[in-house]
Amino acid sequence: LWTTEYNINVQTFTMKLFSRIYGGGKDIIIIHGLFGMSDNWATFAKRLSQKFKVHCVDIRNHGNSPHSNFFDYDFISEDIINYINQNNIYKPHLLGHSLGGKAVMKLVLENKNIFDKSIVIDIAPKEYDISFHQFLLEKVSNLRIENYTSRNQIESDLLKSLKNKAITQFILKNLKRDNERFLWRFNLSVLKDNLKKISHANFCKGVSDLDMMFVKGENSDYIESKDLNRIRNHFSNSKFYEIRNAGHWVHAENPNDLFHEIINFL
Image (cartoon, rainbow, N blue to C red; front, side):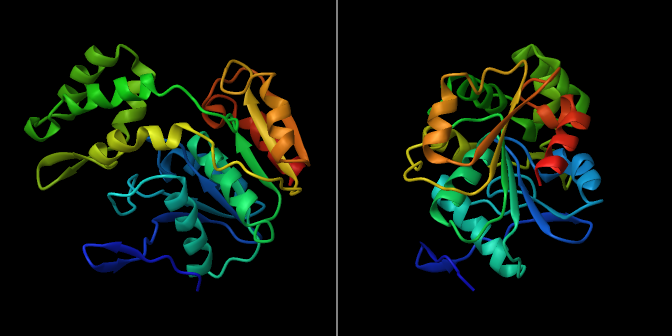
C-alpha cells in the first residue's frame, strides 16, 4: 500500500476514512464539500449505483471520519490515495463538489495515471473569499451546544444567528448526541484554524489531459465565464455543463439533470 505517515506526538498515524458504499461495477468516489458529509450524497449515490460502485467518503474532520489537527488539500488528497489502496480500487472516477472538487483537481494533476474520467461540481481552480465561512463557524461556535438538552432549541437559536433556514438545516445535519450531550460531527476548532488553507488553489500546477467534466449551477456564481480559460489551462480535455434551476448545491436542487449529464459523460 501507498501509506502516508504523519508524525503526531511521536506516533505514526494513517487516516482511515469512513465511507458509504453502494452498488457494484466500476468505482466512483464522491468527495463532499466543506461542512458536508457522505450522507448528503446518499440519495444521489444510490441512483448512481445502478451503473457504478459508488464510494461516498467522509473527509477528515467531517462526518464519521477521524478528527486530526491537520487539514489542507495535501492531507485530504493523501487520505483519498490511502482509501484507494486500502480498498484495492483500480482507476476510479472521481466526483467532487466545492471543496471536494478542488481535491479532485489536485488528485488528477498530481496522479495522472491513477484516475479515470472525473467530475468537478461548482468550483474553479482559484482562491475564494472565506468571510462567510468564518462568520458561519463563529456563529456555530457561540452556541455552546454541550449545554443544550433539546435539538429543537439548538435549531431555533442557530436560525436566529444565521437567519437562513436552508443553511441552518445543512449545518444541523452535523449534529449528533453522545451520552445525552450534543456534539458536532465536524472538527469545529480545526476547521476555524485552517479555513485559509482551503480557500486557495495554489496546488494547481501543470496540465492534465484526463477527460474532465466541470459542472456549474445556473444560479451559482462559484464558476464565472472568466474562469473557463483558467480551467482549460490546467485541464486540457475539460467539458463544461450548466445545470438549470440549480445553485451551488446542484445535486440537491436539480439531481435529475445532473444525473443524466454524468451518465452521458461517463
